[in-house]
Structures are given as C-alpha cells and as structure tokens.
Image (tube, rainbow, N blue to C red):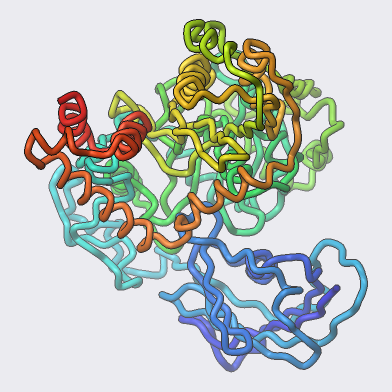
Length: 596
C-alpha cells in the first residue's frame, strides 16, 4: 500500500499564519508514524529532537525522538485504516507547538518504495536566526560583568524558551541505591577541550548533516597515526553528531547499517547497544550532565558565543558495546575526535566550493572495499587517496564456550535417564546495572533463559556483566539446577549459534542432542510473560515494590520463622539473591535468615 499525503503547517511559535507552507509526499503503508514524522520534519529542515503526537480517528499516538527513553511511535500506517479523504493532525514540540494538518490524497494497492517528497510549497524556519550584530546592547552571551568562576544560577542562555530551572543539574543516571546505582551521579572528568569545542562550533555552522547521509563514510588520519572512519549523523534531524569508529569498532557500524532489523524486542535492544565509537553530539541542554553544561558555558563566555535554539550544546559520548554512553576514557580520545570534526569542517568547505574531491564521498554498502582518506596538510586537510574499510569480524569471535564445568554435578546428571527437552536462549536485559567501579559506565547484563518444556519449569537465570568472561559461571549455575531437579534432557534446543556455542559443552557432557532453531514457542512465551510489564513502568514499579515489601517482612520476621518457611519459597528467595536484583542491605538480611 502506498499513501499520498498532503502536509500543511497550521501553527507554531515562529510561524506566520499568512504564509502557506505545504508538502506532498508518498510513503509506504509498511512505514511507521515515526518514519512519517522524520520525513515531514526533514522536508522542512526541522530537527527531530522533541516529543510529538498524532490524533487519528479520535485516537492519540504519542512518540519521542530517536535515542529518547520514551517509547517511539512504531505504529505502522497500514494498521490505521486510513483511506482517501481522511484528515488528521500532527502536534510536534510541545514547547513551540508546531501543528500540521495531514490529508490523505490517495491510497494505492501496490508495493511501496522509499518515502519521497513529490511537491513542496513555501518555507518556514524552526528556529529563526538571531544576529548578535543587530543588537547594539549585546554584551556577550552572559553580560559584561559575568564571571565564569562565579556561581550565577539566574543566567539563562535560552531565556526566550521560558523553561529555565535554576536547580537543573543536567542529564545523568541519578537512580536510587535500591536499583543498584549510587544516589549521586559520578561527576565526569574527561570533558570536551576548548580546541574540540572550537571545532564543534565551526562544524555546527556548516550544517554538514543536511548534505551528507550517514552512509557516506570517509576516513581521516588521526593524531596517533591510526585511521578513523567517520559517519555524519543527523540527516533526519534525529541525532546530530560526528561519529568516529576505529578499526576494531567499525563492525558495529556494519551491524547497525546493514544488519537485519528483524527479531523480537530483545534482539533489537542488543543491536542498539552494540555501538563501539565516539561521537561529538549537538544536543539540547537537557541531555547534558551538569559538568558538560558548565564546560560549554565557560567556553562560550570566553568566546562571545550565544547559545540559542535546539542542538546548541556540543558534548562527547563514548559508546561501548553493552553499556550506556559514557565519558571518553582519555584526553587522547578527545584529540582524535577533534581530528575527525576538523576533517568534517574541511569537507564541508569542499562541498561548498563544489570541488571535485568533495564530491567523491559516496554512500557505502556491504560490498564497499575502500573510502576516501583525509590527511593533515599544514593547518588544514587534503584528500590523500583511499584506504580499505576494515573487514567484518567473524561472527563466532564473540561466541566463547565455558572451559571448566562442574564435573560433580555432571556425574550426577549422567546417572539419570535422558528425557524431555530443555530450551535455552542467551539474551541481553534492557535494565541497567551499576558497574563495580562507580566511575565506570553502567551496563546491560546478560542472562541464560532456560526451561523444562514438559514440566513448564523455568530455571533461575544467572545474570552476569560480561558473559564472554563468565561463561563457566552461567553454565555451571544451570548444571547445578538440573542436577537438583534431577533432569537430564534428551534434547537441548537453542535459538542461535551464540547460545549453541555456550551450551555445547553441557550437551556433550550429558550426551544430549543439540538443535538450533529460531522457533522456541514455549520459551518465547514464558519470556514475553516475564517481561510483559516492561512497557508499563507504573505496573512494573508497583509489582517490584510489592515483592520488596514481602521480602522485608521475611527479613524482619523472628528467627524461628525461617524454619517454618516452605522449601519452595526458600528456593525462590535464593534464586532472587543469585540474580543480584535485591538491594544489598536487604539481600544480606535474607542470606542470614536462610542460613539460620
């Protein structure tokens, strides 16, 4: 199904209602409302960094920009029952209140291609430019008497927005101790340098993200002699950044750009958490930590730069697989990122002058072998031939198997008769866990989800930070439970090659057949039920509080009460303790209770 949709701007803080601004687009019915939003905003050269909502046939569909914690609007257009003549509204950015009226001009029963704009009329600016030279009273961004070393909570670099909060301390992962995080977020110490911020503000003026796609990758010779591979993000206004990969991280680009987007929730969670790169990001203030905001503001005070509009604040995130974005590991990383940003500024100049070399940045695909290389020449850069793209890492590089198994428990299992089926799947959990070192990035843990199909019994999973270093711990924990329940499976079914590599030593040890199949209906249903409350934070929070309240009652009960607890309840509590999801103080009380 292909829809032809007319989009008319009807309102907004900076919109002159006397103007007519319209776009007509074609989009496949298999695309989502999120994608429709991105196409509309891109056609108007709007940034995609605010919440939005659609009202269609009386139903409201809410969405958030890419990378946000809120739910993204993945409702497909062909599920909305849209027909020719239907009209609906898009409300974007609840602060500036941009309103769009959409009309369905035609619906064709044919296979759709990429979304495209087929007609355009009029222009509108999301954030009208403010020229400092037009203000004769302008005394710099903070006033002539402002002291960057003096606390000044009343200054507002975005005062026209009207949302200044003097207590705002920037973004951070300020999660209470019961969730495994320190109550006070760690203060970052590796922050953008003045030379990097200088390059960042020069890059911002180029708006290179509006002229290059993220698939137009180029290389740059870094200060440390290595090669960095650069992708410019922001084509759809979703996430404006200069993204730099080193050789060992470029596989993560390949997986995100060319890998399969099929799979369930957990597949997509893990795919999104595979990035291995460093990024210079242009962001709104609310996404920065307090120390990042202070760094940018001090630089702007020294250089008379006014911070206005969306994506005004440059900052740096280091992406590592399985962890949330965090501060860079060293000033050396910042220096190399500066090289990439300055190369991007040079490239923008080449495109501005329409020089032939600047036009050589082509989109790459899975079969591209090389990309253009930029190297320093004096105080600038020059094109210096091409360099090979890093080869994809072999899939099984990160599929380790346990080297040592619990031979005592295996011996017990071998004495049992083989029967039934065991289903297993290794997954990455979407909930963050604080690292042992509070200055290290919180991580997304891994666990082996497994169960006895016939008995419909799920085994307690062992949750670990780095499964590649803890395969023995994961598998031996399962072996102990199999031995305790006297279950020696005849067949072990696994969902993928990674889980197969993990389980194969166990299967060989007990003489079980191992089958690899994407279809594990019973296990997948159990997994879905376990996490059915994830989309409803209030429900999940209430349920968690109820469980914790029950455990606190058990911990505070008289010593003699422990002996009266049913064995099954003791096992369930022990399983929760092994999973490491109970607050440490309460966990210690429960361990003592079980020991007694």
